[in-house]
Length: 410
Image (spheres, one colour):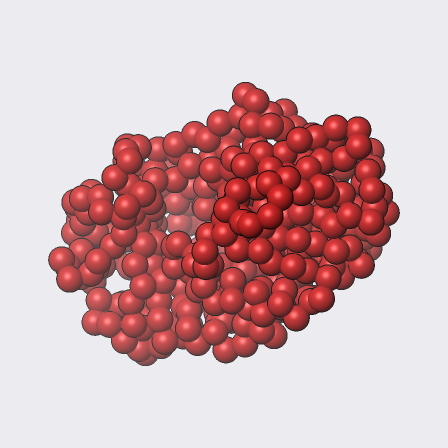
């Protein structure tokens, strides 16, 4: 492979833009190809734990986010039946001191805007819009991307191609022809409300959102967290559901969610009112691939490689970690299959552990009857700092090159 060629990144989402910044910081020229005419993030908000913000901070992204991000005081676990608090985990300055970086919540669009600001300030990065990578030709001489939607040649040679094109990746099958997305059996419902909205009095009583709140029930659960400097609240609820094409339009019948809310505490039932416009999205995961790379120079990162359910709130963080660790594996040297193999092994272990944590959260949050009572009792018996310590392996993680503990340890 020609080390003088740029690395091509397919996709200008969180994974792709972070990868571009990480590569450019190591002196590597990058071309980011994005099929959209302009960037816009679907969904509403996201949580950025310290394992992610420590990386973003190094590239100036958290500074660019500024007051658009919120540093919540804590995570509160509450019962849907009566909104009684089960337990809480401290965040804020306590978490920043413990894990070395802040825990932030923000709108996806604000994070993408901050990433773009940093990308556009980096001379080694070129961002090309309306450019769709249709495929990649990989061989001993290095890869080339097959591109549509831009003027000029339909093929572009590269040192490497990084597929950061999301859960519906068009390049994934070139790496693993048997790969597939799988419907996770759950529907995500989202809405963003002003923090002073009357339906939020129980979750943001002061009219300003300061906490991440997880409301637990055997039939559904709901997570609320602040955005926009605390002036807005992003709500995400999860119910059982079926896969259908209408789900992607956001026009699914909200009756299943409304039923769950109406059978909960009356203060939650206010969120079922017709004037609150929930949008819906079916949840998909990418089943375990045999590999995340083609030795000829194509590598998958983020959701393209390992889309997971959101029950550990780590989808964005895993994409950010992928980007940083892959850039470190490449450094300023020609691509080496040995380094990519080692990178894949470490990332698989880390991502698998995070996915197991998400599955455990989902199981615990969906507990019923005596099991739920036992869960609540065990959580109440543990000090908040002890619950936080259970997350040291996750939030305290740093890339191995930073001299910290690597994935799977601790």
